[in-house]
Amino acid sequence: MKPARVNNARSVVLAAGASGYSIATILLAVRLAASTRRQLRGLFIEDEDLLQLTGLPFTREISLTTAQERPLEVERMLRSMRAVARESRRTLEREARELERGWSFDTVRGRLREVGLAEGKEAALLIFEPQRTRARAAPAHGRHRILVVGDPDRDVLAALPAVLRGFESVPVELALVALDPATITPELLLQGGVDPGQVGMRQIPADALADMLPANKAAFDCAILPQPEDSQQLALLLEGLRCPLVLVA
Image (tube, rainbow, N blue to C red):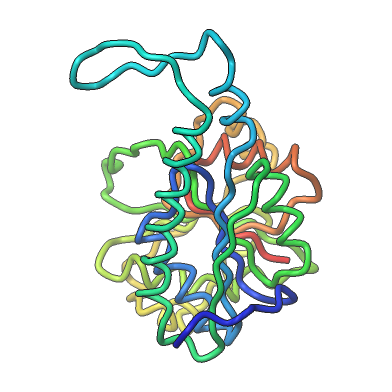
């Protein structure tokens, strides 16, 4: 299917900055768009802060092969970003071509958290690709961890089956904030292709999670949360979690 102009209202928006999308996050976005029967919009954001930093006279690039320094140039950085954007678009096209409701891809200039949040105001789901993914060693119990934060006004659990489909073959631990474990039914887990016997659950107090974020002590493979109200809250989530974020409107 050729890309069509996607009406952003109630769509699934996948936002990424200078490092582009990972294939795992693209597949997650496609699954969410397919399962919710919504259009998918890829959004690549040319990082304004990075471009401003590149233009400073003291900024240098160090070659990994020669260890030599050279000045960073804004135009070269822009060319690099646009090359990443083209590759991201090709990958999105390949994986999303079977979506019945279509997809689109746009490149804009700005700050990831501000542009993404503004674009996501009318979206059903906003997915953020982390820009500095923290490598997480598998815990002793060998489970992958998914954070799910509840909200009485938003159906965060509707996104869970599509997220779980990326973890069918491994044990999963659901870390629940403001959610009763009884709401995670076997039927919901089976929708995600996961054996309920492979899923563990534990509750995290909201204040404990808030303390973990600034200290970078939160280690999850994916997070499902209600959309924050402002870019400052979103910046804290992006920096503290550093995993794909599925934000529910």
